Length: 252
Image (cartoon, rainbow, N blue to C red):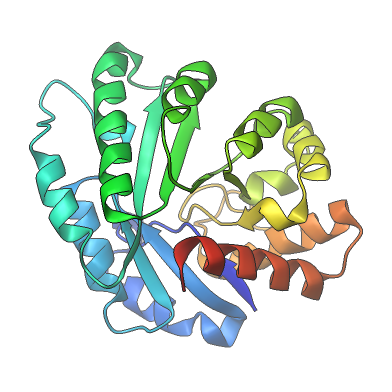
């Protein structure tokens, strides 16, 4: 059984199907799933989707791609209230996004710093989004005193060492299975398996052989297979270790 540590079932591409998909996961070899929020409404929806499943959990947060001229820092007060729900196991997805929306980078930094403080107050780990913002992300995280995971990792092995030194886990998606994902594969070789988690980031980045399709948590098994191949371990070993890593971080 594998743990999909990041799936966006509040996304409109799952509208009308999310509950049925989550209900089907144990029969497909997925023991747990975590749904990260991206703003207030998304975070509420993630909690709601998890409520009837003892193996499904949520995170709440304000995604950097959601930060624009209309974003109100007071929304974080609502996020903090939502974070007290028993289904919530992390603050996320939070971070910096410089591929899209770099014009709001300074505001993104403010939102990230405030949510890191929130995580510390609530003793919750964080789920970090870092896209083309490595140095700023590292700089801000250097002042953070809690735990967390760098989600959807596709950076270099050298960069991963800097995150590992700070105590973070590294999480891989279906990108690991892509033919052009040499950096991610090299990083996965170097990172101790005891510090790795796996995810789909559904509905995005479906792994080979499903590339181009809508991704769901059943496909996290392909990420596990690829990681096992890279590490020279059995599927069962990698499934067990990555699941235990996730359960440790998210206190499940």
